[in-house]
Length: 320
Image (tube, rainbow, N blue to C red; front, top):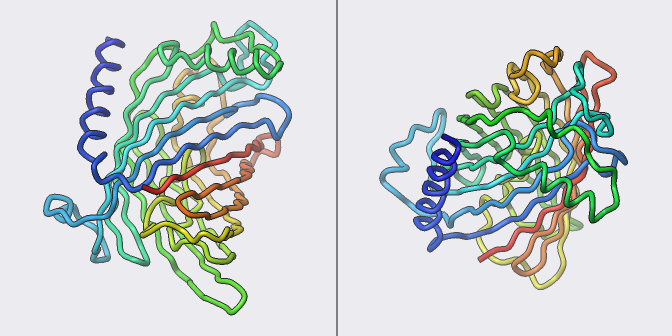
């Protein structure tokens, strides 16, 4: 069954990539890790690769409903991500009840944007796997061998192989934009809802950005973990030969009804995640056909002072 699932995923990915590759506008590589906390704990590492096509008009996409607004542009996109989760104590080889289990996740995202200059709608289908077949254990152990960090001892207790699926809808809106003699400023708000056996959650976020010469993309806070494909939307052309920049601050409220890693295996006796607040600080630089971003995220439960996580990320976007 696992072989069938993996083969099906690769077939779908290859088909969609072939379809959009001729019009691909941007490619991004995103890496994030909790090394900033000095230890591996819960969500500890993520790697994502995302393609977003050029904007075009298409009769089929135009039939997809977009509530409250009329759109003028459309984009396809695909993404691949690898995510790693561990308990707080990675030196124990026994199962730790009351803490997050070891889990490796591989996801493929297939998404469509419909948008105008000030707002977007995004529809996303996520297909993935959790368990030993993802080979995340070997990836983490290899990384720790290279860096000299503590070797995780408890991967024998990782969550079993399972198929993951999710559907999400996002709406983003550029609510404010102002150009000054000494720079420019914008505010991007977004709403996202996730449904499926992987993640059921809803979030609201707002991101304020100030800088000089930055591209007029949708600078939303994005997902809690993983890449932010919204930043690859509405990039019309290559950037200036000068180095431009922006700095952003964002705040996200998330209500989680179910998250697979935390809630699937009841034997770990874990509390529900429920309500969290996430802060993000991002520094972006723009030069020619590249956008390089550094960000810091801090996530905290509203009702449990002991549940707090920090991680940092770096992304490189290449414009075709």
